[in-house]
Every structure is written in structure tokens, then in C-alpha cells.
Image (tube, rainbow, N blue to C red):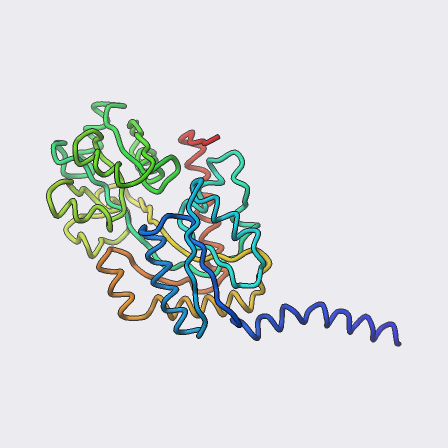
Amino acid sequence: MKSKCLLTAAVLLALMPATLLAQGFPAKPVRIVVPFAPGGNVDLVARGVAQQLSMSIRQQVIVDNRPGASALLGTHLVAKAAPDGYTLLAMANTFAVVPSILSNPGYDPLKDFAGVSQTCLVPQVLVVNPALPVRTVKQLIALAKARPGELSYASAGMGGTGHMAAELFSSHAGLKMLHVPYKGNAQAIVDVVSGQVTLMFDQVSTSTPHIKAGKLRGIAVTSLKRSPLLPELPTIDESGMRGFEDITFNGLVAPAGTPREVLVRLNAEVAKAVAAPELHKRFIQLGVELTASASPEAFMTYIQAEFVKKAKLAKEAGIKLE
């Protein structure tokens, strides 16, 4: 009897730390690691959400930018952090894409992390240099097929959102275009504006000013519904390529092993944060739709679906980084 009581006590003691952690969470500041440089969509959304979270959980929420190595630096940092909910990773599509195209990414998005919540969705827009004699998706496809391999498209880098969207578009349409990768988005846009490169897929938030100024011509957006920033542009889906959708998403994940109670609390707090009217209005004006996942598990299911889809696309397109 005595040994049985001791065993029961040992089991309760083993379970107690996680339970107490969940009940007392958060008891200190929370850090959100952004694996990109300041100023981009991931950083801006993370900072907006962090500000709301700080007021809601009554603890400071710190944004820590750790850019480098295609977001690997910050990603590895969070993967190795204590699974207690106090260190989170602000991630985007590249989180699910990099393991598909890099031979040794050093992390598994499905095994090394636990979902917290999605934070936003950002459609991309297909833009061309105004000198190109096309105004619709059908016209662009016809021109590309008439000049196989001659039309070039820019991207912010191998495996980036613009690269994958262009490859998905080419796959759907049966096209072959020349990829011109850059080390960042800014120079890629500059070269499409100047005519050095023919076209690109870019986030609506960064291309809209150039479209309004007549420096780029918008053809269509990649979401299934039109963008409030560019309501005059059709979707690629309604332009004849049925089912086409490629949206940039951001979210928050925690190290694997983080107690579910903590993840559920964080998920609920993120949902409140992204629903804040002023924050939501501010980002809609940038073409960014703030949104939250129904649960931590729902977000991991979403990430898994993206991982599978992008892995298939990378294999078919032969996209590989060593």
C-alpha cells in the first residue's frame, strides 16, 4: 500500500509543473521572435498583435527580430526554446516551404513546433510592366505560350511567396517562364517597374502604390475573393483558372511540448487581439486581413496542408536549395 501511494504521489508531482504553468500563465513577459528584418508584413503584424496582447494579458510582449539564413536563424532559436509559452515564433509561408526545398533545414515544422494561431492572410497580385501588351490573365497566358521561356518573372528569392505563386501559376497554365530571383522584394519591384523583368507576383500591400501610380499594371489577385485595396482587379480564379489560390499567411507557433492549456490561452488571446476594431481597420487599409484560427490544432492542420501542397509543387517544379 505504501509503495502504491508513493507511486501515485510521484505521478502527481510529475504532472504538477505543467498544470501549474498553465494555471499561472503568463507570469512574466512573452517574447515573439520574428525571423525577418523589421518593416515587412510579418514584423508589422507581429508588432500589432503584440501590442494588443500586452494590454490583454497584462504582461509585456516583446518583439525580437532575428533575421538571417532564409528565416532559419530565428526559427532554430524558437525550436530550441523552453516549451513554456514564453517564446513564440512569428512565421509565414516560408516556414512550411523551406523544409521542402532545403536539403538540411534543421527543423521539422510539424514535429518541432506546436500551433498557436494564424494571425493574418495577405493575397498577392500578379503585376506586369506596363509596356507588356496584356491586360488579362488569358492574354498573359497566350503571350507566354507564344514565346515559351522568354517572359521573365522576379521574386524576392528562391522558395519565397512570389516564387511559389509563379510556379503554381505556371503549373496550372502549362507555361514555362524564366525565374529571376533577388535577395529581397524591393529590388525585384524596381526591376519590373524599369522593364528589366517582365512580371512578378507580389503582396498587394507593396504593389498597390505602384499600380495606383501607373508604374505597374495589375492583372489579377491570387485570393478567391477580390482585394479591398484593388477591387477593380479580378481574381485569377474568376479569370478562368478555376480553383487557383495562393495566399500569404502569418501566424504564431510555439516549441513542441508546450502545454495545451497554454496554447489554448494564447490562441484565445490572439483571437481577441486580431479582432480589435482599430487594429483590424489599420491592416485592412494595407491589404492585410487579420484573422485567427479556431484552435491550436486547427492551425497545425492548416500548416500541414500547406507543407504537403508546397512539397508537391517544389518536387514538380524542381525547386531545390543546397
